[in-house]
Image 1 (cartoon, rainbow, N blue to C red):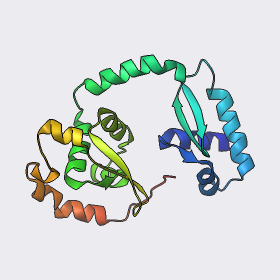
Image 2 (image 1 turned 120 degrees about the horizontal axis):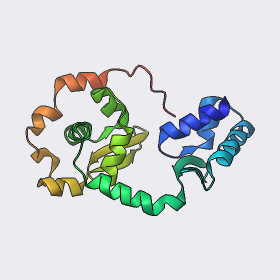
Image 3 (image 1 turned 90 degrees about the vertical axis):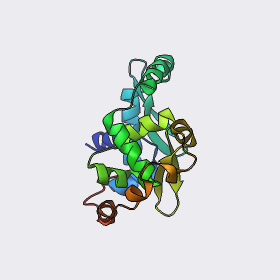
Image 4 (image 1 turned 30 degrees about the vertical axis):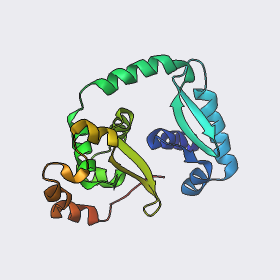
Length: 184
């Protein structure tokens, strides 16, 4: 059961998780976490698995099998060059008018998980991700590449910027306490 939980956390996180975080948040000993990770590595880090576990600097993360690199690069280039989906456009708009903004804030506005959309926007180079020391998490903002592509020299030059950036209903929504974060 512990192995299954750690596996699910690694899958859901989509970024490296420190072993100490797993121990603390799951209330487990170092030995139990290590044993579970060794089991996960034994099952996934094989030639026939598309997913591997990467462990580096005291953190672990699910990654793709290094042998799939060339095919994965081709796929991602094709995926990144296609048109944006409506959910991607919605997320990009929220970042444009409310950024810098955290993932939980974006999800509070949209009402759905945005992990894959954010990853796609990062891959395309449309947004930047920076660790915010005050908020203790990543914040997202428009990238210079995107702003150059749409022909604006500052975010405030976007259409109706003031009306959307200062929208009272969105500000009230963001001021509400989240029901439950559940993230590590």
